Length: 88
Length: 253
Figure 1: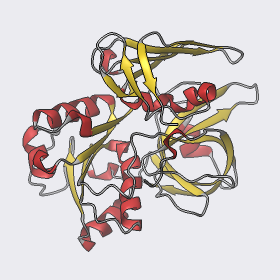
Figure 2: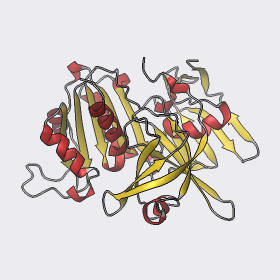
Figure 3: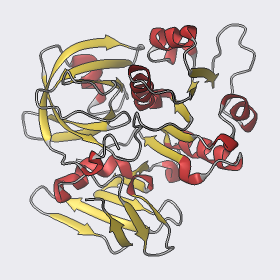
């Protein structure tokens, strides 16, 4: 597996994100703030070989989400997403 | 619509190992009883957490292999990664009666609901068969008439999971059409030399795009990218291709 094939998909972040949102976000549609593609969060490319999680747009590779959880505090950067649509 | 709990609450639960079954020399199916299991949808996964005596913990995601049922029991099939932190324990050391911390079920997109009526194309690479097996089992356990095909890509015949069950499905000739592709070693007298899935093999073994199947592709990242690219080149609608990638790096604690 080469370096640019080291990602998983947004689905694999479902458990970790549920710790923060108390919801399963994998089926939620989100819009990339860079290219405007609107896709399911499960489709995003997820990088886990880093301190935390990074999700990138499957269309343009823009960073959608960064999450670092130290156990005591979670740092969440969502500026790469224009919106996230949840069916409540 | 059935199973609309896609945004359900996800919590840690304790499960008890109730049976173990080897699928191959490196993979094992673990049946786990979870007293407060809320039920799942075929295709979902669970996170398994192992905690060492010093408090260090590691979490890995494993697809659920069993069909949704009412007996508060799930099965996962774990492939051993030699440099893994969790899979060697789950495939070699865990014993019946042991307790495991589980978070889930998780996943609202890579799932198949029994009320989906469109043709379904499943494509598995290696241990990517696991969530697709849950989907097949769910289909067979329900009254669904959806037409199913599975293309199962394997390194070699001995690497197949669920061999007897898949063979029985194939012999019964129910509406799940099975085909295999071998990438390194083929069975004796196999008509096609061992090779990666290509456009020709795909066109013979996959529903044509005009039937608008929903495609579920699961396997290592490079496999998923390769197959998804071929499907799109064959005219499949990108929006109907759902993917689940497995990595040897599935660490996120």
